[in-house]
Image 1 (tube, helix red, strand yellow):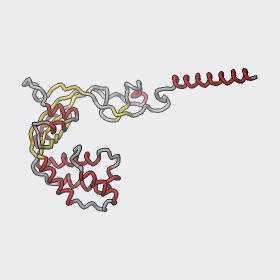
Image 2 (tube, rainbow, N blue to C red; image 1 turned 180 degrees about the vertical axis):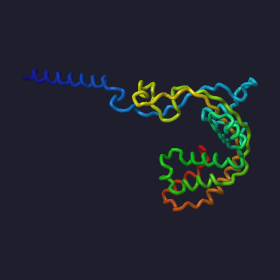
Image 3 (tube, rainbow, N blue to C red; image 1 turned 90 degrees about the vertical axis):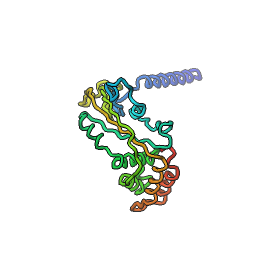
Image 4 (cartoon, one colour; image 1 turned 180 degrees about the horizontal axis):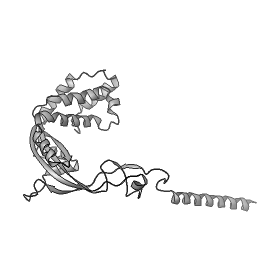
Length: 247
């Protein structure tokens, strides 16, 4: 009787182990009954022409860093010691319109947008919902920075590149065709076609002390309505006190 019970227990354990392994092996990568998951697919590109190409010169370092999204590395070098670096960019298929944008760009009038965007990014860093974390303080600050008459911005250089985008992505949330073959067709979509575009960049700088003093004036004059809660005001003050760490 004991041997029979032991045999039943051992068989049961083996069956459970087998089912567990089978379940693990047979588990599908995704549910075919559901639409493929949405993933962010950056739009890959190659540079096919640039402003220095005819002269046989390379793309400037600041443009290469801007294309990589790492332009703030310029602030750690000697070339821009003691200055903050800002880069404006515009992309499109009409090179004449982009040339016009470059010609009309004014350091005095257009710098505020760049400053406000970077201030917004600093307050949003590691904060899932800035409006909730800071309350009315957050939109009031961004609006004040956008409307401020910033002085001292210097336009240093401008440059353009021509890109060819490959069909592997479309720059937005896209169905990952490589991960889910047939996903585009199944959802009535097509991969983004190959296309070309120009991107123009404008490099600006401002002395760090000058930027900091103007930002402090904005902080001091800010009167958000309705007033943020004590917790929201405290959260904003914590960022303000250590604003330039990671800026």
